[in-house]
Length: 215
Image 1: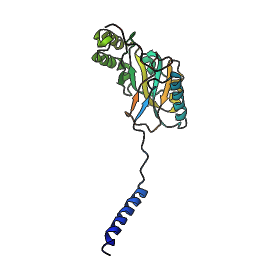
Image 2: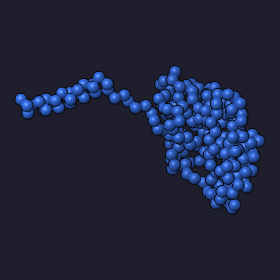
Image 3: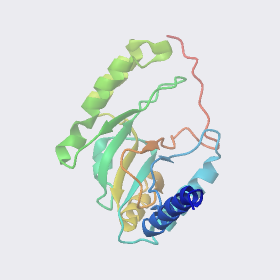
Image 4: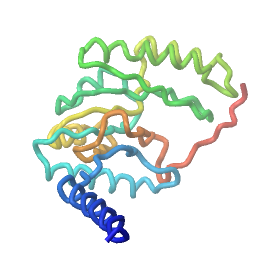
């Protein structure tokens, strides 16, 4: 009897753990890490098809809001972003100023729901641009000039991220200035996904362009 008692205790403990598992099943994890935008080396045609498929999937949940990414045909100003059809809630603009034969960085600027935040986003991007010292070989010269152009309201928005229903995203996708719209599942978590827009110079394959301009 004494030898049987420890084994009985172990059996009771195992049974208790199993019952607890049945009563409190593990919930499926929501989306914690995702990426919006093309993969390095991906064919542009493949990404465009993948983006269209993501929007079609979102349309199966017509009432659910989704996070998504807009890639433009060319760099646009914030007035064009604000004028997008669908009345999306734009949460971030990805600024980039193209310089010939220079790999220039993306400068993300978060914007609040207040319309003034979007209007002032280029000023914020210009400050970030100058801090990066963007330009050939890191020279601040051309980078500073480009930053001045951003601050003056010049076109520099290479992409935008926001939130809306599938119908709102579809309306934005139909705008002539928009090259691609990709959306995440409705359970995506804000701030837990990367954003890399399809850049205008990516014609066939998503690969870096030349970066050999003289300083």
